[in-house]
Image 1 (cartoon, helix red, strand yellow):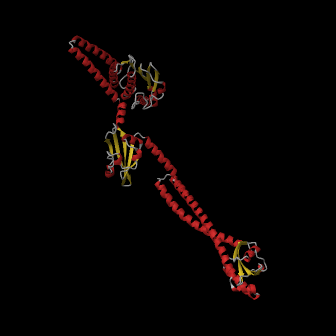
Image 2 (image 1 turned 90 degrees about the vertical axis):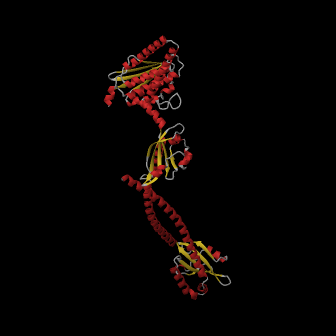
Image 3 (image 1 turned 30 degrees about the vertical axis):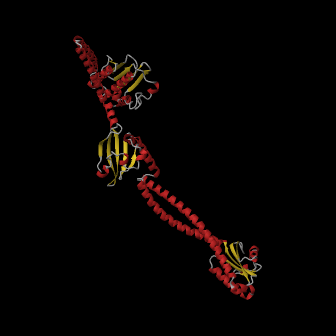
Length: 534
């Protein structure tokens, strides 16, 4: 709750700062323009008033006859009191000497010669800074002329600096009041907006929400399962790399297109109509890839807003399941055993057809003896039926490949030993298969694989040796990583599964290999360590 409150406060604060900056900028610009307009308006008032007085008959009469002095002074005093933008009024003779003014102290003062000279030159009015007194901010000078155009006097209208300052202060205060009112209104709107933003971002800050979005996008892209999502109009809105690879779809072209256009065989859009999830839907083979799909509707409240499909590579899942359970090794062993048995039957049949009954009988006896010896050694040493069956099958497979398979005479393994049967099958099956593959690619004439399983009270040792070409030094550090293999594409899972078994049962694996001489894998498990840690 405190975290959400903090987020709300931060959003409100951010919105308020933005609003305040906007208000201050707009207020400052408007205030400057308004002050300029007020100053211009003040100058216009001074100019208009001075020109109006210069054309007034009483002013002309007063400047020509002393008996109009009282009347003119009364007029000027009334104007100063009534006109807000005028502080000073005076009437001067043609030489610029003040003869009439509401302020008696100004009578006899001299107008600036510069302004009077302009009027003598024929101008009707002029504006100048300063004036009769030092405190004057601005003054307007208008010419009083006879009908023939002769200058007989000058009318002066001015304004004090303090009056201009008061005008500025008053205008600023007005704008501050307006800005404060606007800030209050904008603040209320910002609070409402921040609440909507917080709700839309599910309580996260914008940068945190963006970071969370990118993290989840990276996670979806890293998945081995394919993900495809459509909206309520069946348009593709998301497609991760795994889905594009499984379905053979161009991601750049697919997003934003109708599902039927990018994947015509899909039936995922029916989820939009039924609203019922579908699981383990088998899809047609796409480039020899069998896919299982789960389809789930996306809901916004009670309405269906779209659907998402999750795709799994059934071909890869089946292969991994077979590797983990040992089924593939058992099937390979049975296939090799059957193939070898058929070869022997063909030899016997050929001898009988040639009439070599005695040789056929001897071949059967020799083959039976050799097979019984091989099987007998395995069954005597290995009491676990699953492991024994695997070794018999591997022996037959090696014989088919021309590889001599030997179980060390000192080997021993009891039923229900240190590891479960499936762990032995994964471990031995992959190590023997890896050795057989290496020897099958080797030009060596005599090819041998030796397996030793030594079970003691506190430990178990599994050793698989071959006299193949060995392991390249640059491959040793990566040989247990998934997908690392020298045998081509879609290989490199066997040794990775071996490593997983070793790590799962807290064992240790050691590899000794010399190029051209062979490779030995030693896997050790300690029972005491397992009991103490378990």
